[in-house]
Length: 150
Length: 150
DNA sequence: GACCAATACTTAGCTTAGCTAAGCAAAATA
DNA sequence: TATTTTGCTTAGCTAAGCTAAGTATTGGTC
Image (tube, chains in turn yellow, blue, purple, green):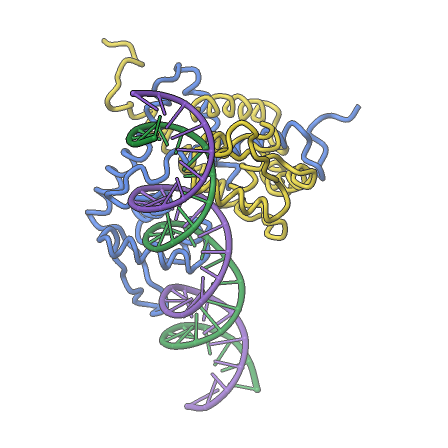
């Protein structure tokens, strides 16, 4: 009998089922959270992009697009919106005038903190209510997922 | 010192961080999967709705909206698209002429299977490549997440 | 039985977020 | 110097969500 993790073409029913459940869970999780804070205009993609800009320092639009796994035009627009809201600014690159680096403003950093807290509050509260063992489980699952997603 | 899971108003930094990571993971996971199959037109929301229709039998639009956690107009449109694609049909309710029940067609059931397989294939393959212990971990995490999401 | 409120869905019209294709300007290369 | 490549933008499309306002039906109330 072949050892289990050998099969390649069909991923195997158990893995497929797990993938399917994670997929559904992701959809519902984001739907539950979508636009938790219309006032500050911090939708999921904006929050996510702003977070990258805040934590990975000033970076080029290409790098941001790569990190966010979206195409260049999407990033162009997202950054324009964040800029319009005063959350980020752009610096010209002195060495290469094609590129444009983005950095968070003080307001951006402030709003990120407040906004992500508000946005994931429901989820965070639900997580906090779980027994410690399940919280640990979710943390380890997040590790695995982050690796999986690349 | 107070025992840990007691605090309520701020969910606590560990839970908040876990929530934040799950949030990010969900965004990136869905971005990676979005429109894996443009040919069959099976986007995530359609797949998700079709799946509910297939497995929870004929159900009213309101019930579907509830299950999918979206507002009525969104469901109206989604169902119109699925109908146009021949994946579902509508039955009038004999007792109440306001309501309209949706059921999957044979084609709908067929396409669901093929489509979801294609759509989550990347993810399923990645999951299948994990050591058994991590696959188990993800399954248990999916249990917890499904409860969490309600 | 006539009205009125509630319910189930639809329509209209907006926003956001993604895409491709095509363009422009700067840099790198031949 | 001419060409290609790179980084970003513009134009224009689609999908998926929303609210507000409509229609039709049901059911309750005087």
